[in-house]
Each structure stands twice: as C-alpha cells, then as structure tokens.
Length: 155
Length: 182
Image (cartoon, rainbow over all chains, first blue to last red; front, top):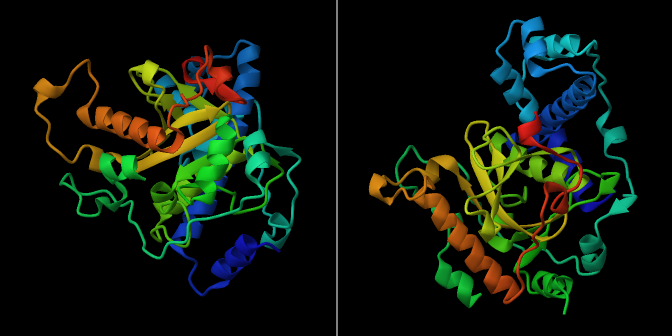
C-alpha cells in the first residue's frame, strides 16, 4: 500500500472522519453521477432528444437541466432518478468496500509529462495550514495564498 | 530545450509539484502541476480540514484521471473549465461553483497538462469594492489581476516558454465537451 493509501485508511478509520476526506469522497460521488448522466444525455442527443424534452418530461426548466449537466453538483436522489427516467434509465446504486476500491492499481495510461517527471518525485514539505474559506465580502485576512508579483519574479 | 526539462527542474527545486491522485487510478491521462503555494491548498497534510478543500482536491484528481470535463466559452457559466478573456493571454480557470465558489487559475504547458498558479475563493475575489469605472470590457478587475499574476508566475517558472495554445478545444484537453453543446 502506498503512503497516501495508508494515510487515507488511517484518516477514515478515525472516530470522526476529517472534513477534507468527507468532501473528497462526496465530490467523487457527485462526479460519478454527473459523468453518467452526461454520457446518457449525449447518447440521447444523438437520437434527437433535447434538454427541453427532458425538462418537459420531469416538469423542470431547461436551464436547470443545463446546470445539472454542466458540472457535478449535489443533486438530490429524486432529481437523479427523474433525469435518469427522462433519459430512459433507472438509477441503481453500487457500494464498494474501501479496501477493494483503493487496492493498488497501475495506471495503463500516463501523460507524457508525468512519465518524464516520474523519477523526480519531490514534494514540497510545508507545515502551515492555509485556509480557502471565503471572507464575508471583506478583504480577507487569510489571503496567505495570494503572494505578490515580486515574490514570484524573484523565485 | 523542451518545457518538460524546465518542469522537471522546477519540481526538483520544489517550486512546482506534480499532483498525484490520492486514490489509485487506472488512468493518469492528464498531468496537473501546481505552484508550491497553490499546492498547499490541495495537499491533505497542509490544506484546511474542510469539505471544500477535499472537494477541490477531488476535482483535480478527477481531472488527472481523465474524466470528461465541460469546457465553457466566453460568458458560459455552467462549465468545469473556462478560458478567461482576453483569450490571447491563455489564462484559464477551473471553476468550483458550489458554495463557497473557488477558482483555480492555470495555463496549459502541453495538451492535457495544467499548471495551476493560484487558487482563490470567489468571495475573496470580490471582497474589494471596485469603482465601476474600472470595469473595462466587462472584465472584473480582480480577474484581470489574476491574469497578470498567472502570467507573472508562469514567466518566473518557464522564462521565455509560452503556454500551449490551440485552435479548437480538443487541442487543449482530451475527453471534453463544449459547454455550448449542452
């Protein structure tokens, strides 16, 4: 098992799963749903089915369908079911054991840049935590991650 | 000299980090590199322990995995990735629209190779009150500032190498769909 997998298993074995990992897997599931719906929509499009048709079938506005298909989002189960039905499908769920899901996999398709740089493997070791929380429409005191051009030029 | 040699050198100098998926994947058909500062917000060791940080990281990992992405044009708001105006600057953003909205600014080093230079929340981008006189060509000043910053950081990393350019969407990224076609 790699270092990151060990770290992942440790993190999700805690009494309380860290928000980072919860968010990580939430996004994974959202992406999977979105990807499948988009695939179905593209198949349907080739047969002449439009967003307007789908919207009408499930009593939603076409712009909502556009938004749902454009990027992953936190769709309700009912909405997923409705869109799937409108596209001629019934949604099913498959839950996979974590150990099976994160088993060692060797990628069979690696970008040339990755192949070229793979021998380097250096990572930046940092100890400070940086926030991505938004300010409340005030200049952010946490804008540590915005460093000025001078630093960049001198880097 | 190839840009790949510069990338390798910057990784050795720890000014760039190649992002590796946190869970094993069958495909790494895309490459994502991040400036050291930006990577701090993606690494679970250093990022804030928040749902948003985890989601952001997963978005990047899915990108690396080669997942289908929606690429927007001009005013298209419903998309995963979009090139900012003016398009000649070749500065793009990865868009996370769910609250809090976050933007990751990047350029392409090659097809399917992203170099992230900065990550900002949209609320922070709009945190300063701008005089509307500064609104030139409907490009918000903060986005213009981010474009300048992206270009500056790119220059610092890659000196005279220009970012990757293309004619069509598929010259930049594979397995993508034009947001206008959805």
